[in-house]
Image 1 (cartoon, one colour):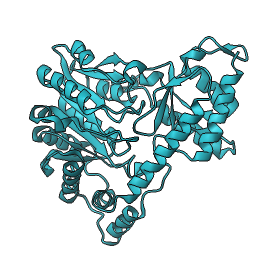
Image 2 (cartoon, rainbow, N blue to C red):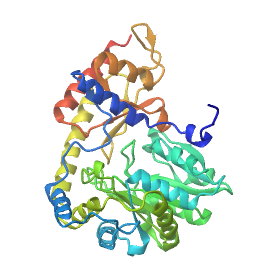
Image 3 (cartoon, one colour):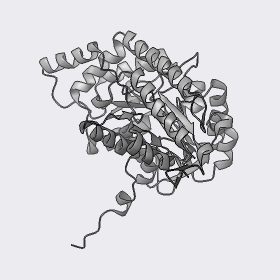
Image 4 (cartoon, helix red, strand yellow):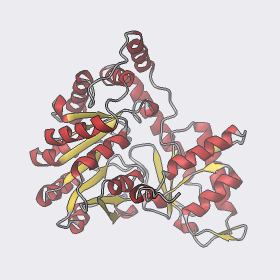
Length: 399
């Protein structure tokens, strides 16, 4: 059979984080005592009040189609959240409810990108960003950052990367994979460039509730009327409410963009699961104490992981201010050997760790940083201690 598949689709890289997580689960199913630091989701259960709202929706027969872009009830709850938490005024017609954060990004780039448009992506980045841009015929433009700026891109770097084809900047704060949080002053400088150069800012704020040690999340759209008009704010409930499997994200945009996104979604997926939408209303409007309890647990685990990482040779990190990841530079170990094999990348270490030490880390070549790996602390204290003990042993074993 000689029929060819889509060149665009076959060039998309599969998600390495999902592949790593799947391998860890398979090894656990075989009875192997494995510790996985790959998790991009909280290990907590969804709060009971949210689950109860879903059960009530079922009992009430709320099982039919809803408007493609989400119910008015949920859109109003999202607007209320933006006003109270982010100091942002949005109307329901500016909100699109999607099937998770990735779906939101697909909607966004299908709405704003024309072939050849450039999207600036600071590196390290979440590995889905460039693939989504390329699927929409856009061109990723990478800006490399490093530990000297806390892995945060500067306004000067963004301005230097702009061309006549620049359509958007992706800005993730708190960041996956680095856990860094942009300050208000840093965002103001970036907003100034976005307004002067006239491009969109795609603000990924999925981890907005998870900030630590006095760090504050600021939405760039809140910094003035001109940047508000150019910002596409993306968020959701997966990380902060332990609702990863429920699949719900949302965007807030100028009305004309929301209309296009809603039209695209109406043909691709139509509405988000109706039960999930009812649960999401309760998540946003109901008690928030469980969200804060989870945040406090993550902060405690962050501190524990930092203390244990300080005992590991050859590595360095910038302490995260948000999300639930450590971004670890292991270039200090490059050139060392393990059983005669030279270590030249984080991927080399990851392959050895999973097979010989039963520890899963996420090597970050697909995040734009082959010298680094990501560790999630969305796991138990005991697993953090056990896994980092094994990690320390691996680095101690290098010659």
